[in-house]
Length: 254
Ligand SMILES: CC(C)(COP(=O)(O)OP(=O)(O)OC[C@H]1O[C@@H](n2cnc3c(N)ncnc32)[C@H](O)[C@@H]1OP(=O)(O)O)[C@@H](O)C(=O)NCCC(=O)NCCS
Image (cartoon, rainbow, N blue to C red; front, side, top):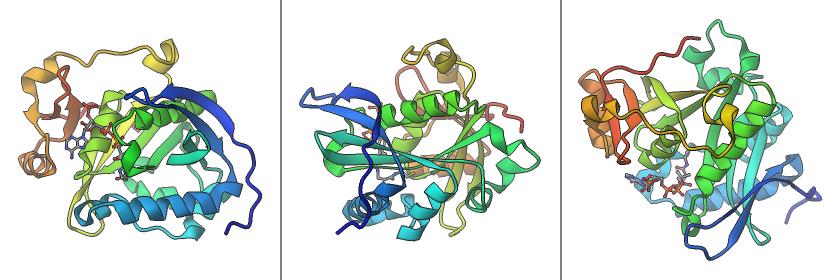
């Protein structure tokens, strides 16, 4: 049972599932949706196989409330009236973000950043293009709100998330041990004011073909970790859609 009266969400974009079976809308949700978002999070996390649970960190309801209090936004994807996915964009305020991104925030103008996090899609709606649509909607939001840097952090074992971000123009700039000590977290950056957003929302950019030459196969988490231990740091996507570790990360100064 939910206490709050749900505010009608603002529609940001629309798409069709890849299998053509339905239309979905991507909407911006406000704080009245906290209970729905938290229930959805619990459902997605419960459905995850045990080995993937670590990719979606443990959260409580208060952290969802806190997100809105600190000016963050959440986009939800709907098929008919059912919310089937959610994704968050954090504003660079409060204590949540600096804890997550200590190396990124050092000495930088916080107001130029937007932090992308916590994407969750119902099991039966994965692989349908919803993840890209929600990412593009948040990038458009960041662009409209004059952000310069989009930052995302991904557990190295979450190859699906990494592939989606890199395909959308993010590039890795650091990799740090997971606070739990059992994995690594890759931080990725995208310049919000250049590239496809600045030139037109849906325009495709081609990955640089030379990546294919120096890339090292990183198509599974074990291989990513092995390459990291060998000194590789950059993550990129080849034109053929392979995830690779390149010898050097793409430069990103902050
Ligand atoms: C992560 C998540 C948002 C991705 O959305 P999705 O709809 O499942 O993404 P897709 O199925 O389109 O996968 C993206 C790409 O990764 C590939 N992929 C998926 N799982 C993979 C795996 N285990 N190994 C290698 N590649 C994989 C897909 O083939 C696809 O590649 P393509 O675009 O070249 O076809 C979704 O799986 C999810 O909600 N997971 C649970 C919660 C989570 O881990 N969230 C991220 C934490 S912030």
